[in-house]
Image 1 (tube, helix red, strand yellow):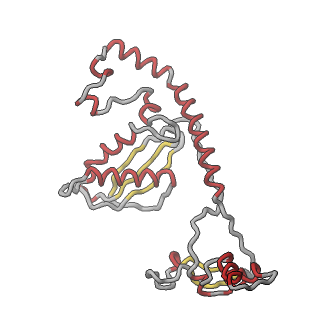
Image 2 (cartoon, rainbow, N blue to C red):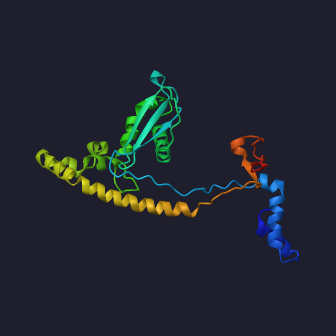
Length: 257
């Protein structure tokens, strides 16, 4: 089994063989082995450095993606167009019956997965009307602290935290001891301090993104080809060979021209 250069060399050494070019020869042996190449594990390392998208202020830049298809609901809707503001992470979603294009965005793809999981968690065995649950799931996202900036989308939009339903059913201090006049004054103060709050969130977000970029770029493995190189193509993409459990992961080789 050619399970890697080190393994082949180690096996040769254990059987008391040695020659000066054994590492080079082992690499050449594995590269020349067709079975090793077509069954080689698919590397998931990114091939390009992370391209960060930064929004300078709220609702200046949006990411848009499509979620679905879901089970057909009233009005024959089965897709969601999901938009997320890059600064506040505020999410909007619109249900539609058909789509005419593929938009895609990495940030919103993660939000889509989270929306889908939230909808599934709220649906019971007999309840298939997923449309009714969208507003509840969106509310949860808008009042949830985001790890990138340490704040909630609701707070960065309105300047204060929302009163969540749990505080009505089980009163907290701020709902039980509320004074309407003082509350209005406090809300005005929060609005005056909103820009400073957003600046602090932007600083935290920039720091978080720098750490994310550093971690991501460490894993980047650039791939470049020149005419005459022999390459293999992912069987997952081309579907040339049967992709069963024992099927090859790659197919080829092809010569770059």
